[in-house]
Length: 595
Image (tube, rainbow, N blue to C red; front, side, top):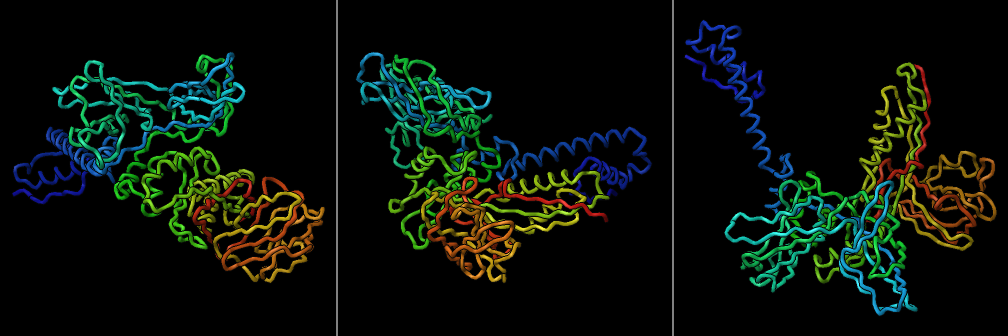
């Protein structure tokens, strides 16, 4: 009698074949069969191959049934639809410019039609920008017309469809996958052209009636999007035979970001004398949402339900709808000192910029306004930056590598840069000392140890030759009571607070503390530090440095760097502070040793 036990675990080809042969060998009908040299070996191969293909196919199909495991974009999008989530499309970069038109003859107004094109270059590539709506300039200054307008990268194209009720599976799929869905406009032409109706985009059924002229935009297959209409219960359905014209703007994604000079492609309202000055460079361009982003955002967007109630809701909604947001932090006014009840503060860091341009802030503010409770005031704050000073002394075994010290140093710098990209460069980040030193050790197999010190950096920008006061909040407890002796050439190894050099009373000076709460200006001369005067206090427990009446006549670089040692090896940023390591703040010393 055959052995009826079946192995359901091994699903690779060789395991399946072995299990089949074992099963057949235990059957008396195949007692004398040579499974290695007879034709039955080919049949077993065929059965194993078929079983392997079926198991693989079944496994893949099962994986595509869940948003957590699906690998195909169309599968992930299908699951996102069930969560009422529309993946973000390409987004056009936008720039604000001042347009000045000087007519050759007196005129009463200037009309700038929707779709008026302008050209800009980024590197060797040329991009077309256009206006998103009709603009009219009614006022002039001595006959010169001036207005601030927004330009959006891309050109407008249109797809036309004919409503056919007899085709129950009819769909209105837009042809271009690089569409910016925020630019979609739908016009319905009915009654043989005698009636033209403008439809409005909506994302909810709330407030819709059978007469509401509304349309929905949904993701379709092959990275495309489609337009859908109501069913004459929720939203008006166009009449049978009507012509549907869908106009939209295509986009090049993030490539045009940074465009700063714009030229009009033709006359403006027949006028050739046109000049353009840039208020804000092009920003905000982004490609369509990735599979992993959809997988992450769809469930959270469903949880939010289009409403911003908690601080996390604000972060989720904005991050899901704007692809250029690199990092975002939202927090309630009740967390501030003193509290500001009834307010939500949001800081946004966009890609390829330190902070957020004013035109992007306006876009974010306009978008979030109708999703917040009436009693909550949303305030966008510029992000602050806290950097990390890294000083690392690396030792490597010269007998374990043929690389030069410069090669080891380059590898370590690359590791620190990767550590910054992976773990920092965002709000509410923590630098973990042990992880950093571990990454440094892993830069090359020959590295035997590293002695690394990290300090936090904040930058102040004093107005020269003016008495000024500053309050610098590091947001964590600082080191104190190290017993440093102030008049020593080794001053930089003991102070909790130290600054980069500046000019004070005609002398090259720095700020230092005595680790007991007093901040001094100290004169530098030949590596010796001499105390000049007390200019502030340090609250080590709360991490606050107060500088009072500091008169600086000059300083190096973009500002005075204030270095601080944390009480612990690890420290974090909070609220609207971005934590990052800049290459200029990294010093790596490489020492060869023989082992």
